[in-house]
Image (cartoon, rainbow, N blue to C red; front, side, top):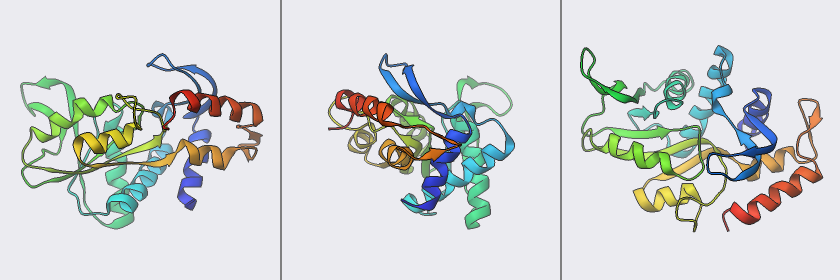
Length: 225
């Protein structure tokens, strides 16, 4: 596993973004882990987060793209932090773009904020986490309505490795099959478990034998087969 992935897993724990226990998800599933990107709140956290995203995007999609699109609301700070990091790490100016939940009819009018998207643009989408892939159903038509664009891919921070809306394959694989672009993550839950199982992090064992068993049981029911 790449060094930045190991660091990112520990960064999620340190930032109180990745938690272990018993959580009820929006889907109604009872999960032994929970990830909340809204817990990244400080300047140093957002700076580091942007760098991890930038490295993962560069590793998976290179730098041949023009716009980083972050869906409202959590995607807005993610896209801003990441284009700053991309400029710093790779010397490439990427424009950021996000959508508004309500279209603005005066001043900087329209549904988009940040950069406009125009014909010929190559776009990468950035999100926090994709459990079912439902959010892309809203995001995809917003982007493609702006012109003849190429979507290079989607980058999320954590691949929960659960079945998507169809119940037949993983959410990220489902996105590729339906929309034709690759969906990647900085880390997968498999990598998280590999890195944290019976190993100290922040001074304690976060995934012991008992929690590992709960995670295994969860994936028997909801995981990608």
